[in-house]
Length: 223
Image (spheres, rainbow, N blue to C red):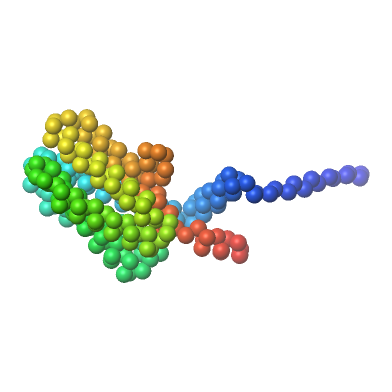
């Protein structure tokens, strides 16, 4: 018996920016779920920044409640930062990891100083200036490591986060508990979930700068 089989060849041209964006997104997703190390980097970033966010939240509560565990929480915060810095080791050098750890510690301790001044009703001019300088230094250093970590974007995200934890402290001092919880939740969301405008959280931006998609695509194309 003779049977005729017809084949249709379909050509696809991905030239439109929106189509290219979708292709790039699918490539990134394919890489993440095909290579376990990439999946772990994303998870470790989310877990690390989530832990640090909760630590700051706890510090705000302790400072405004007059608790005696601030030193302990600061020590745990330093350990949280070490865990985040460890994620960088898969891509960046020892010197970068050390500097990252130092600058993020400086930033967080400056934030704690501002929170303590707020709670004591002290003038925050000096402590706020120090916090701003430390945040800028941290943001500039990240951009020097990877242009994907834009200094302006990092500065904006961290400034929002810092202001929200300050609001949490102020609301708690006025016993406006619900508003305090809302402020802390929003700070957590910016760092871990997503930004208010729908842009990625800092944890996502951070992991994206560690995962280098183009380097991962090379072995895929060779196979």
